[in-house]
Image (cartoon, rainbow, N blue to C red; front, side, top):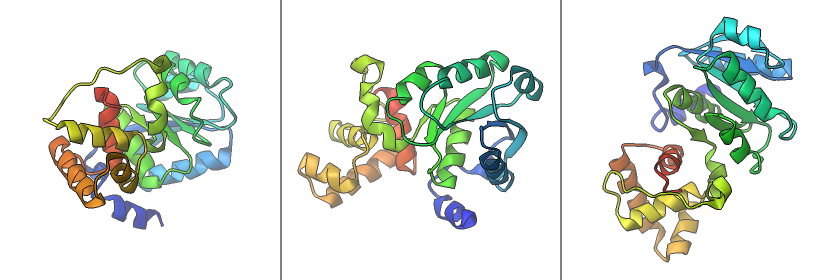
Length: 228
């Protein structure tokens, strides 16, 4: 199943084989889940799991010196921000990717404000999850695309500064914003009173101009540039 998913996603996700080695530390209260994640990373280079723990232990993290801390969060928001800060304190150079049990829209602004570099969910496709880890390791910010609808509410609902990059037209920018809000092609066509074929053409041009191949990457671009 993992190989089938990876093969299906090969054209739309980052090329893992061309990525540098990424040292990971997994923190999950459930040893079985930690073991499953360890197996996933071991089966898909360029990952090296340098440690696992059920809690954030500063000494273990400092000794392992991971590039990315995979911080699993299972029960509400209690303590997650403190855990992120503890990770940052132990290994300031490490990126932190929070893996939530559910979407938790109320949790997103809190973990990002606490210093998380990524926010994904345990029911994400394996290929998307691996892509998220690589992306944060490269210095980007990753947010599960299903959370796009909640992003405008971050920062107390303050308007985001929109920059026009890669010569996106006004219509293409509008389509990109709706993609980031979690709209399907059909929903975008209804919202803009355009045919689905026209929407697909707009999306193809957006992908070409931004040099991307997946909606996830489009959402990331919208977040980073203030379009969403």
